[in-house]
Image (cartoon, rainbow, N blue to C red):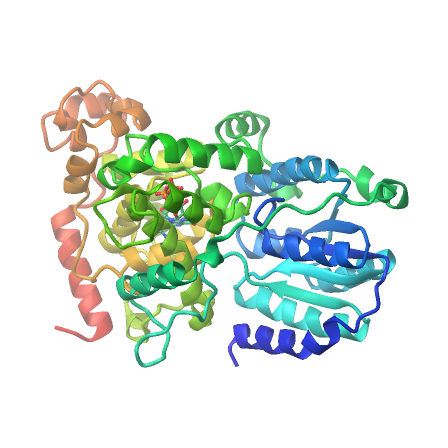
Length: 519
Ligand code: FAD
């Protein structure tokens, strides 16, 4: 049985119990990756249930340091989560709803602590939004059953995807593993069911007596990050300025993007030196913004007011990119073995990878001698973010030019990026290393120099991130050692290219062919 089916079965077993449950003292919403009040399906249902039974709504979030370790959550992301929780607490308290936050040291104790808290508070119903990674699905399936035994209705709701996993099928009724036909069906489904994009209103205000009834929950403070995930003071200052937290900030960013940049998205989205994309990935990953919200707002602002796969129009192109997020989540539900970092196609399991830590270190530090690769890696280190085109370039460089196991790069991204998201990151690495679902063909190997010339035409992106090369005013910046700027590069300590791309390409082709058993 696939984990998603385990969860669906557990949910359906509880269905008959739901309405027969006697009202307790409160209804509870368990926050996870959905730290917002607006357009939150599970929170809305919790609020409706509370209103129906005239009970207060309580909210809580359990911090699990072991989960942060297991999921390789970057310190910058942990810090962002905690700041989002602070904002959420303020927003909820305006509705007289408390947000209780507690750290649970041992991961396996999280379900029992959850049940314990709900029992103490006298919860009749618990709501949360589903997460589709295997461990989380199994945990929620177990919780659904355990809560039944305590007379608590535990409700896991589909919310994070715009289209619920399992709704889109091939002509033969199976799951789809190629993006383009999947995307056409995704658009058609949402055009046929526009109500799927309707917004869920924020929760209703609690009865005034809630504050007196649960003073400890209102008073609780947001804990500090676990020791191993703490940022240095300098990093805090830098990241807090770059990445303001909270759903109001997320919505303001979305509105600005739709007003100012979405129209030209299809033309400029691949240029890392510009500011053409939305920069919303951190908020979509944290759940301060729902994917449903961004698709609805972009559709409503689009000339056609419909979803299409038109790649020559900014709004549809952008919605199509947001759809990739759904696509990789659907893939995760249908083929959960990718959670074990297995290549999507079994025949790609036999490629012989390298594990050279010195070479890997030059890649992570941005010292490969390939300016576009180094600029991107340094941007990631400084900001916790990397442009999509650059993610593809650096991933291709690691997996193909260096033949280093793509999973080392996948892990590094999770450990350093503010938007680290298992499904999208795994999908992006699988695509770039040609081992994933609907990947780039293995024989398509990015030439870093050509990519650099094409997407950073003037070299401004490189100039910004590599001060050693900032003095080079012309196209020599893309390849200083090959284009007459060896002296400047050398004097300033910029390294020579660590590999010869032509030879590296030949080596990669041979290795891939041998691995997958093809000539
Ligand atoms: P925009 O271009 O404005 O796109 C809007 C939103 O659509 C993004 O915020 C994101 O939620 C979604 N999106 C766009 N492109 C993709 C895509 N290819 N796959 C999945 N979702 C997409 N995205 C993450 O959110 N988290 C990751 O950990 C992540 N790792 C990646 C690793 C690799 C190797 C690659 C090639 C891509 C990865 N992506 C990841 C996808 C993409 O690079 C980022 O979503 C994007 O750069 C974020 O910038 P933006 O918000 O300005 O995007």
